[in-house]
Image (cartoon, rainbow, N blue to C red; front, side):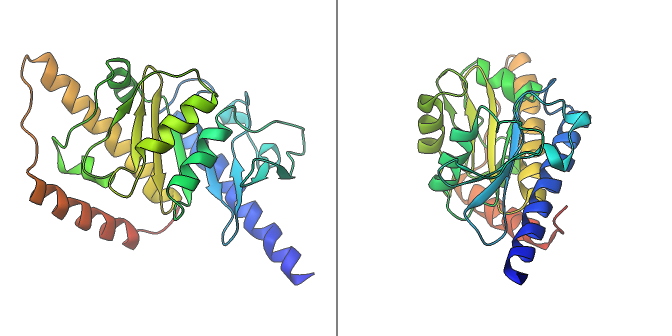
Length: 230
């Protein structure tokens, strides 16, 4: 009974984080309409709370959020029968690629998506790029919700690349906490804006040297571990 109560509390916390950060994603301009999605690992389990498909973020409640297992099977359905995000497969593939991941966030943020539409990777032009690793690669376009997209995104992810631009689509980031993942998504959007502005000036910006990248990765990961989870 106590174990079931604890699991219920953990599922509720994960669902609350999905709702809170979906709303924040809209408020901060990191997505458009019902685009993008967020999943959060239920602490200590192989279960995941994920934003439901086609639900307005500003109106979303915890009762709307489904909980699935590592195979995508529902273990705690949405009270209102909402299905998981159409990108469920991509989220689960990201967790398999980086098993320590606790949160996956997919945005349609304007500058990151602009770079994705150019099929350009984000190089380390600013130290904040290193919140995601040595750079942010860009994969080709695959139809949204497809197995091909999920596989290609997962193949681009590793410990040195915890974010990937999806060609003609958007951005995916993987974090150790909801705070870290969300901050990473915002940092990458900021850096994509800087890169696009530099390109618009007619100049290809210089990039950080490998040792500078390594130092920034270590410093930023340590910094985010000190921050409280939101």
